[in-house]
Length: 198
Image (cartoon, rainbow, N blue to C red; front, side, top):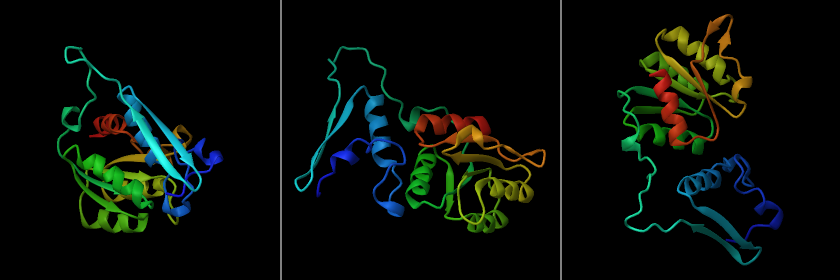
């Protein structure tokens, strides 16, 4: 690559920091860092403008007889019965990442890139769970959650947001959101959320 400016290097592992505008989510390196740290390692950047970039990952070396607590694979997370889940996010990278993570648990996943498209899918098919981003144009995630509950009284709703507990789970005195997941996601956080609502 062309190298990363020094002032940008200080922020590259921060969640949602991106220099790509609408083309980037700012989650890739943050997720990578979390994975490396979960394995007891470190990730470092070495970059010079005009000369390119190197990402260096250092992981601890373990002796064969050392007792270790390995990171959980998706097969080792608590089993949740296969469910039909609709994932809605207007950012393609986030939507696909979330869908892939959920599918890795063995669920049937469909995706929509807008609340309007999600409503069409909700009218055509019965879903066990709706996972939706909060901040979307035209119709936000809370309004979509309300519409989903009107269409299917048994559907559960997980709202994904960078604002966390600031978002109310009720609208007009009725509970429309069953669980809130803050960004960025990881498998453990997502597994826990799914166990709470399914």
